[in-house]
Structures are given as C-alpha cells and as structure tokens.
Length: 416
Image (tube, rainbow, N blue to C red; front, side, top):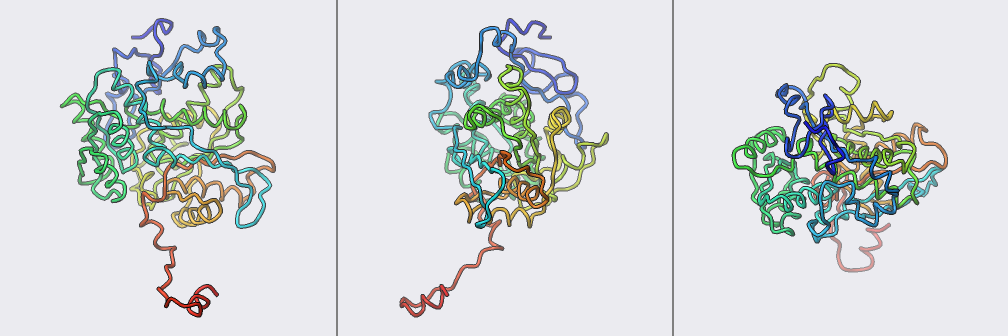
C-alpha cells in the first residue's frame, strides 16, 4: 500500500474506499473494491490520481508555472517529448452573445474541442495514454469505443507509431469507423452494445498484455481530459466561469472537468469550483436518474446521441462523488431538443456539432428558456465533437432543394 506520497509524483486513490496505491501495485482498478463488480451495476474501484500538492504549494507553484511546463507537474507523464506531435488541446474558446438576433443578457462561451486532431475531445485522453505507454514500453493499446475514443486512439497511435486495436459495437456510425480504418488501426466490430465491446477489451488486455485506454478503467484518461479545465481558467483570464454545461454518457469527461478544477483548488490557485451541469439525453439517463438513489437501476439506452448512449455508466460513482461534493446539477433533454440545438448552434455560430456535443448546448438552451442563467453570468458549453462524425443524425431536419435550370428566373423562384 502506498503510504508515503512524498516519495512519488502521484499515487492512485480509489474513489470508493479511499485506499491509495503506487503505480507498481495497480494500473487500472482498486484490487479490493473491484472484486465486488458485476454486470448489473457500474464498476466499483475506479481510481483517480493524487499529486503531492503540499510540496507544489511550498515551491510557490503558480498557474503560470503549470502553463509554462505544459501542465507536466500535474500530469502522470515525465516528458513533453513523449506526447504526440499532433496539436492536442489548446482549442478555441468562442463567445457568442446572441441567438437568432436576440441579444443574451449573459455570456455564452463555446469550447470547441472538435478542433482536436481527430475532431473530438477524446484526443486529450488518448494523448496522455499514448505518452504513458511510450514511456513504459507498451507497443499495443486497446480500447472499446462507440466511435470517438476509437478514432482518437487510432489517430494518436498513428502519429506515435504505436499499434491500436479498437473494439466497437457493430452499429457504430460509419463515419467514425471510417476514421479508425484510415488511421490504420485494427478494428474489431463486436455484436451487441458498447458494454459488450468494453468487457471483451478487458479480457483481451489480460490475455495479451496490451495497454488499455478504456475510460473509467484507465485513470490516465481523466488526467488527459482535465486539461480542458486548465485551458478554460487560462482563456477566461485566470477566472472561473459560473456554469459549465457538459454532455454526459459514461461520466468520464465531466469527471475530468471536475478533476482539473479540483487540482487548481488543491493548489490554492482558485477558491471554489464552478457549477457544473451534467446534461444527458432522456433516452440515456442512467446517471441523472440514479445519482440521488441508493440503488442503481439500468434503463436500456435509445438516443440519437450515440457517443453518450450508455446503459452502464462506467464512471458513475466518481461522477456521483463530484456532483454531490461540489453541488453540481443534472439535466436531461430530449432527442428533439438535441437536434434543434445542433441546428441553432450551427446557424448562429458556424460550429457544426455532433449530437452528443449538441446535448450540452441543448442543456444551456433549456436553462435559458426557464430563466436559470443570471444576467452577466459566464456560461461555458463544452462542444466535444464534430457533426461530420454523424451526418445521418441531422437528415430529418434538412430540406435539400431540387436542382434548377441554369437561368436567373429559376434562381429567383428558388430564393424567393
């Protein structure tokens, strides 16, 4: 058991029992709590990484130091040269103060993570996992994915000359599968759901000794995702927003957002955590519906937002911990609201988001319509992936005009 944090850069801490482990004792889950896991409940024993904050504070560790050192002092890797050459993170933060020519009494900031190399937020996690694998001699990395995490790992591994094996449910969107294949990864379509692909990837990890990238299994994924919080703090002039709307499926992205701000809080760089809203589709609400209950009940997911369609949210207990500790909020929106939000977002900002990302924007719109956003407040919407990854989802709201004869009279009729 890891008893002396001062001797190590970081230790793993179980979100359930609080036990700490060194990296030589475990790599994925708490050996004790994970023994309780079954197929009907979210896994126990998910780990998070804890750094030696007291030493960093004693050394006058300020935010500008974090930024200058590429966050390495509070990331689980040793050297920046082991990160991908591709530009991961440092994505734009846009501010838009009107919707359909209606001026808003508050500020809306859009964090556009579709600008990452494989067009999704997942590159943040893949970059850290890939770098760690490089530093520790792993040649092959495996993951289960509904598309984005697989595309991300495949692309990052291509840039790092690593082998990627991606297990996907057979009904994953073709655009995402195309990305995986183009990056040269080995794709393994699995009959059933994401959960079936997840379980098979764990078995393969044990059987072949591959390094596993799975979210809510490998604690390094949250460390990659937390970097968005550092960027937000920096881009907002070293202040925190009032609210952050995050699309939620497994619960790993929102845990990463919380973890980033919690690290800043533990370093005494900020004095409070922003209000973070977990936005889910009504068709896949297994976190929001269970978060205040003592018993977890599964509802089969059915939503257009495939990236956040999850029956058993793997990071449920960590999300529950963060939301309760920091007074977070949960919200569900309908598929119709998601598609409408995607259209509103696109025509007002020029940002075309996939349904999972548009879910967060739909959550912001819901709060706006019921007057839950204070005047002059700063509200961030996390846009996690490009709409080009799932073109089929918006076909129902598109009206493609018929072709016209090449003359002005026909053109006048069309545009009138």
